[in-house]
Image (cartoon, rainbow, N blue to C red; front, side):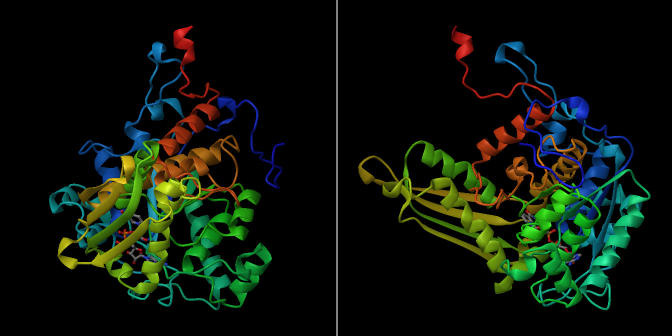
Length: 452
Ligand SMILES: NC(=O)c1ccc[n+]([C@@H]2O[C@H](COP(=O)([O-])OP(=O)(O)OC[C@H]3O[C@@H](n4cnc5c(N)ncnc54)[C@H](O)[C@@H]3O)[C@@H](O)[C@H]2O)c1
């Protein structure tokens, strides 16, 4: 049965029709919460690509292809030619931050991109200045900024964010919001998150379990604007937000961009499991020296990140199904703040595996990655796909967009459903969702027809 909702859209369970998708006409406004390393690398990158100065490496929407029909048909268009995505030239950026640096200054501070590269697009970046943020140091201990909204309570702050969104909406055709802000302290869902009424009462009463990220998510949902959550904060992972998301047809996805170590983990772990190799221990440690590293140096913010990073192996390995292989795995994740490295993180993994008759083996991975270089294309794909999801009017489901799990460390799912972490299953799910919304046959990889 289709899921009814007050907005009149319905989750489609029958044959999809591409004609149901609204075209990507006009400007797509992208509102970024937190103009730090990831956000400035995204914004500067999109502008450099638009100007022909660089290529969108790492972006599935820009470089990826999708096979249609049988392998013998040779029909593999670019994804962006197959589904109606917004053109990069139609993206307009704005955002909020607790520091009032414009995007050029913030990018120079983040030191992800070369100075020379930033100079080529300097006037464009300087013109993007952050709007005052909703922030409270209680939720991010290591930060202290001055570009902050004040109001009589949290509801007042939510209304100020809604006014920002409404004003931006007047200048573009459609809006998407993406959280690229800091990781907040560890919070668990509580009664104040159980219903829209409870949350709104909590906003009026300045409830302590309402973090700024939730206020942004609430404002987005009230305005019917899709929201992607790049950090491990609860934000859109709460029952009342999911209710609002469906009510106002504002697709949501999260959480925590899957970029470096966890990306590699979700490639390796399914491979060991596919071959029925056992794992005794997996020790992961990181050093990074950017502002994110500094924020995560606070134990309360680290706890939020740790939960997000630790969940992956349990779900992939299913120790309850394979007790001989994974029951006793020792999994540890560490993040160490080490300023000299800046955004160039180093992630080490020591993996103790065992094979035939229980004989032990070891694998060492040393990933010298660039955090924001990996995250920026993910952020781009997410805003383009969320905008598409909104325009499909329900063809890829309403509320949580599980097909975007591919991009997240802790993918959101319907209540009671275990998340799919295996990168290749996630990739297949994403591409099949695109085929589905365009009315194309799904690809199961059965392939018997080639041998008839
Ligand atoms: N870079 C990656 O590979 C990666 C991967 C996964 C998740 N993340 C997450 O993405 C987020 C951004 O990472 P980053 O490296 O850009 O960090 P960053 O510290 O460079 O940027 C975060 C920005 O958010 C701002 N901010 C904090 N609270 C805010 C609020 N309430 N409103 C508006 N702005 C706020 C900060 O002032 C800062 O400028 C972090 O939560 C990080 O954990 C990053």
